[in-house]
Image (cartoon, rainbow, N blue to C red):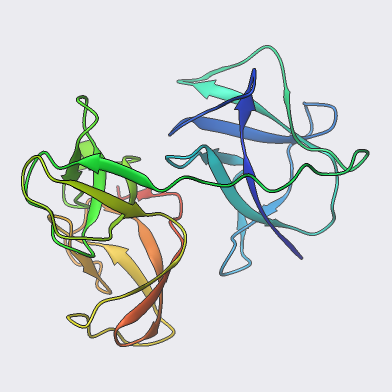
Length: 209
């Protein structure tokens, strides 16, 4: 399978933290997508990250399109996501996301962006935080401090004590966990490589009944 990380663009502008639906060339036939880590089939409805990217695996390199999804309404037009008929442009260089803290955030904590474009701790124990996780804090910051956010990379933290080769999930108050006891929704953040190192791979959250 092929691992793709593609940016969703409309009028050359990235769609940030938006729901999109991935189709084949005709803009009607749903694309068969697979989880980038587990290789399990996933929905063709994905949410872009804070830079407008989506990640998935696909069996064959076909031309792909996407439509935006707002509520239950699809955009009337389909936009090109991956075109096999033309050479791909140079990879998009992502600028590091840096935002001010709305509250104290500890290095390695999971964060979301509030209405004022500030970072807050994200929690899987709070139903209103569903679909809001953007990444992990790369530094500790107090209120007003500008810090960087890791979205799709390796991260090491000496305070962690993970069980290697097991998934890491969003916990409470920005913390991460390998236990799902008490969570309102299941949000995988990545996979533990060693007791102190993970690879960040944020998946679509699953709301518990």
